[in-house]
Length: 282
Image 1 (tube, rainbow, N blue to C red):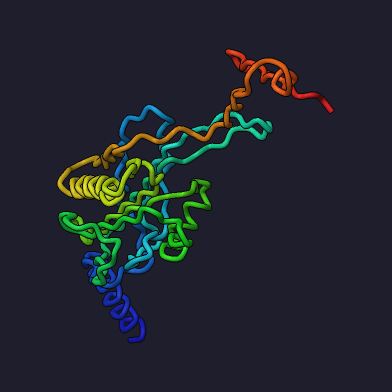
Image 2: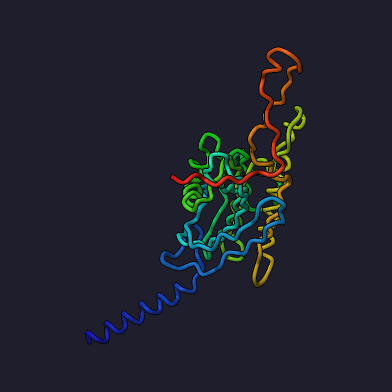
């Protein structure tokens, strides 16, 4: 009798587990311990004349958004980075890599990812559905570190930090039964024109908002494609500004002739090609 009761209880439990495995996730939670098997979309970067885009890999990472977190501990995450390598410094300290942009796409299957109901100054209007946000000075006053701590730490732990940065993010609450969000961290100068007057200053935010809307449209297009989907990152409206270079020596403006000008040493002419000097062994 005892064996028959145990067998019946086991059958009921197995039936319940089987039924739960086919249930859709309900808003506000996800089944704990279920691995996320949906791969993150591939990222197609726009062509550039400065630096190079690099595929930085695929990860199982926690949901990185700080506003309205998604209950997913192992979201499929893919990263693409645009890097520029600076010139060799005069002190021989070597080259320093500069990340011009980092694009992160995350997917979590069977979870509900609602947009925040609290409107903020970060919202980009006319985004076409979903929630689109933009901050042109994300590192000012440690805003990114305080508002998006998971994103800030995760990027920094992988060595992709380069300041100052702008931040853009777009979330689709439920794209074909999955949560989908894209983050972009990039140099503010890539979306900001050079301001020469008050009119330029007042309209300087428009190119960045337009670029953010294009990014949102590229994310929404993922939901209508079948098979191997690709996130096509739109080109930035402006090219990166040149790297900082050492200031050139001021020309000798003193008149020629007798006196201090005659005795003042003239700066040596710059060579046409930089001379490579081997370090002195110690």
